[in-house]
Length: 489
Image (tube, rainbow, N blue to C red):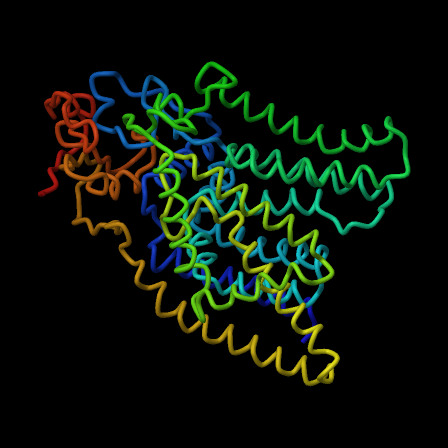
């Protein structure tokens, strides 16, 4: 089988396994509040709107949901990139299929990056390990922003990270345009990720421009190929902020919570709590522990023992850059007030491939050492057998592990009895976000067009527990033509 066929098969494997996980195991629906917000905003964008007007103040509380702003404008609190991509799937009736497709794209991009920086062998080993990783399949099956953020990250890195060899100004310009698109998309998807990635990117850009046989003006001209597309996408994101919050530098999540910032001090989502250096250290520990448990299904972290060998081979510089990239992302999210361990260490997902790539390069270095002692044919046979065994055993473990996520986080698609429509159903929702979330996630924000509308019983909220209840009769009057039902607790 050719290299191209193997890589394509790995991409199709991720697409098939994650699509099955998304549609069947996760039931094509959100399993955390973030996913509800992304899907909500995808439905708004799919209708050609940036936001919806909130319902009258007397009744809007019946439809409040965590991570969704409802202050006169009704919209999800995140930047638009993920929801815009998901809106394409929403228009086709399959929003859950977007991330599996992006997961498959990550396989192709990762292989190209590893092949460019290291070798064909390293690229094949790293891509194989990434494709069968439970972490890859879970993130690709979710409705979270991390699969699209990884596509944007790899696109940027493909543009700025090249072997330390001179390239023509024309080739450099093309790569920088790619990098500009990648970093711009990352800003629209997960803007904070731009900071750690840009630190590595800046070093690579300076190093790359120095290799060009052109003057200073020529280098600035090449740099413009990166800056212009990135700048246009950044302006698009800032314009989105203006439309939703009224200020280019006030992001939607800040309209939801004034405590949602990076760094130490009083931080949080619905309310603030003190975030200290000890909490940051705990974040690192929690994520490292989660990475070991979810990155490789079999034989676990033992695969990563080969990673140090990557620094003894011919590609020490590239290995060091990869390590710095991983460290920058890990340290950046150590400063966030939440560890982000959901379906794995999700804040590390965009660099989760780095340990796999370093381990793959370490194995390649070991193979080169063995080349003087064993024939190339024997080495390639042993490597192929070991890789096939690793993939097979990993898939067997994935087949055992992934079904355990059915109903994860106490979320499931509810069964409803036949209802006379149009209907208004009151849901008791004061105890947990899932109580109302599993129904809210099913309905379009365009409530007037919905045959069944789900509302909070007496507008009671699982977070804002102290707010005064609102008589259901007020909402019944707003939807006067609907049959009214009460969901039993």
